[in-house]
Amino acid sequence: MIGKLKKGSSFGGCIRYVTGKDEAKIIASDGVLLGTNAEITQSFELQRQLNPRIKKPVGHIALSFKPEDKPRLTDDFMAKIALEYMQMMGINDTQFIIVRHHNTDNPHCHIVYNRINNEGKLISDRNDYRRNEQVTKDLKSRYGLTYGTDKSKTNTRKLRNAERAKYEIHNAVKDALEVADSWQKFKNELAKRGVRLELVYKDKERTKVQGIRFCKDGYSFKGTQISRDYSFGKLNARFEGMENHVSARAYSTQQYEQGYYKDKQKPSMLESNQEPWSSISSIGLFAPSNTQTYEPFPEDESAKKKKKKRRRGFSL
Image (cartoon, rainbow, N blue to C red; front, side, top):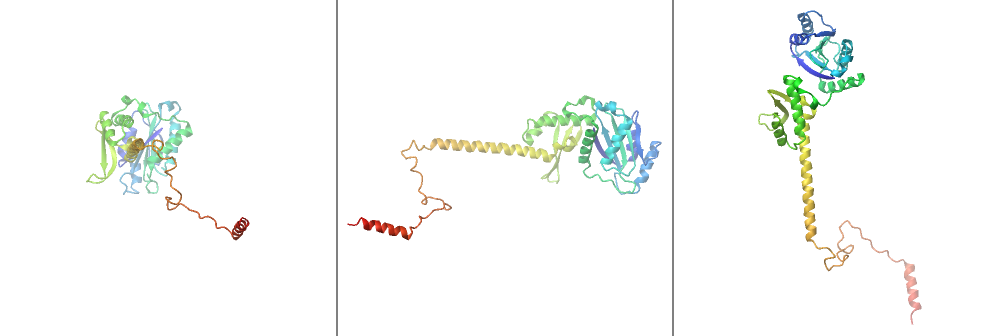
C-alpha cells in the first residue's frame, strides 16, 4: 500500500479524471451531492468559496495496493482503509469522494477532498509526505497488507511514460551508487545509464546548491521524488563521508610509511655501542616541568643523638 499526494486548483478536472476511467465506482463520500460530474463539482466549489484566497483547494490522494491483496479488497474493505487513512492524516470535517479504479493490476482508489473544511478553514498539509509514509506503514501492519518489493525488481515494461522513467531512474541511481564515491563519478555513471543529473541552485550566481534533479526521456524528477535517500543533502553527506574516509586512510598509510622508513634509518641500541639504559636521563635533570620531585625526609633529633653515642663508643 502506497499513497501518492497531489494538490490542485480545479475540482472539475480532477473529478472528470477519477470518474472517467472504465468501471470507476464511488465507494464512499460525504458532503457532496452525487449525480453528474457537474453536480459533484458544484458541491465542492460552493464550499471552496468559504476561503477563496486558497489557490489550490483540491486534495487528491491515490491509494494503491499490491496485486496479492486483491482477493481481500472488497469495495467495503477498501473504503474502510481509505477512511481510516484520512482520519490518521488529519483530513476531517470536510467534503470528499472515494473512487475505485480497475484499470491496472494494482487495486487502487482515489480520494478527492476539499482542503477547505466545513468551517472554512484550510486543512494543514504540514509534513504530509512524511506522515503519509508513516500512516501507510501503520495500516499495512494493522491489516496484514503486502509490503512493496524492491523497486529494482519492478517490471518497467508494464509502466507508462513518467512512471516508467521514474522507476528506471531509481534503478540507475541505485546501480551508480554502488560504484561511485564522488559527485563526478556519480554523474558519469548515471550518464552511462541514460540519466542526466542536474543541480538546482538557490542563487543566480550558482554558488549555493538547493537540490538535485534526475532527467530521463524528457521527464524530470526531484531527488526526493525518486527516493528520500536521494536528496542532495543525503547524497552529499554520503560522498563527503567517502572522501574523508579515503583521505584519512591515505594519511594513515603515509604516516606509517614515514615512521617505517625513519625507524629503518635509525640504528637500534643493540647496533650502537651505547648501553640500553645509558640514554635514560636522571630524574630531575631532564624531567618535564610537570614532573614531581621529592626531597629526602630530614632526620629527627633522636637519630642524631644515637649516631653521636655510637661515635663516642668507637673513639680511642
